Length: 143
Image 1 (cartoon, rainbow, N blue to C red):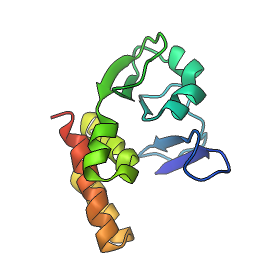
Image 2 (cartoon, rainbow, N blue to C red):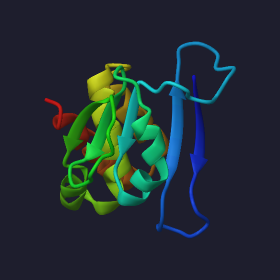
Image 3 (cartoon, helix red, strand yellow):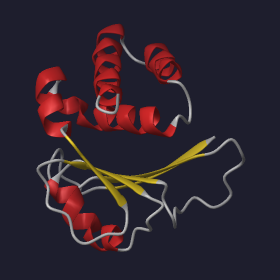
């Protein structure tokens, strides 16, 4: 089961975009995420919007961040990854899927092939192919 809560400005493709995603094998009665297992930052706008949260992340949290960004002090386990450079190679609009591929690979919450199957079922074949390539590229960052 999953829940998702988004926060983004009304303008298109500018400013921050924040998504809280909760995945669980059990019913999700409370959708807020107080202690995240993973925290991903892929842009300057997202970093600015979540600066205070990052400062308060526990050491149990894995923070995957675009390698070009400067972090505040945090107790989280930090992994600087080339999300932007990878997106330039596989498609600039794929940076979110790239980061999700990295999280799926690291967490082992489910096999990457299951994510690829979901992408294939619900997207146009051409879009699905691009997104599967992006997810695989993200997973390779942690191989």
